[in-house]
Length: 228
Image (cartoon, rainbow, N blue to C red; front, side, top):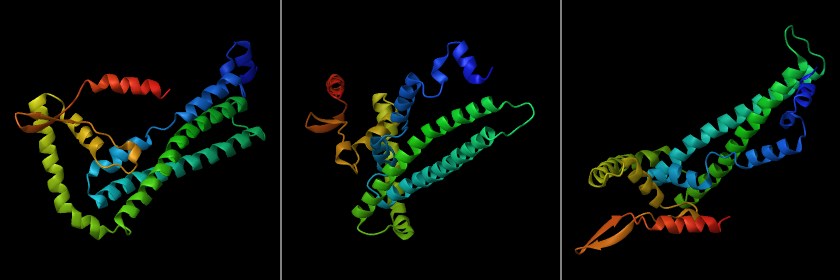
């Protein structure tokens, strides 16, 4: 009895080739394979560096280079496994191994690679758009010299923000990490659709104080329903 016969005899249809339900599930998995959304890349990669454009570019390219490396590694792994499947199909013999099992095992590994690739290739596409947008905003190609020139002011800004976030935690009980992410959310976005206002300014005894408007939660939940 080979693997496919075992599946049929035990009423496990999901894993048969070209099973309609399995193909539907695979399609949905690939559609939702991205781990980083466009918004995530805009706000939690680029915007983490404030308005320091060379630092924005530097941090983006660090993430971009890793995604390129991983995508190529996955493509190589996929091609290698495809060739191994062909070898088994052409009669490869290994003591203690079963060709039908090894073929299905390799197919399963390729499907997992395809999910990872869907994520990496989508990230690369968004990273490239962000790279070109930053170069356009800069008006010229970035250089290490521009990055180095930003460093003193960048680190002063960075540490002041850390102090501000920790002060916010002590004053409100809201974790410093939340304040950091709020700052990222309110930074300038590369894509206008990703512009978000998190804090509401309120006049308290003639002094403008920024804080959360928790009543907005219901409004956001109503808006989400409209997106369906």
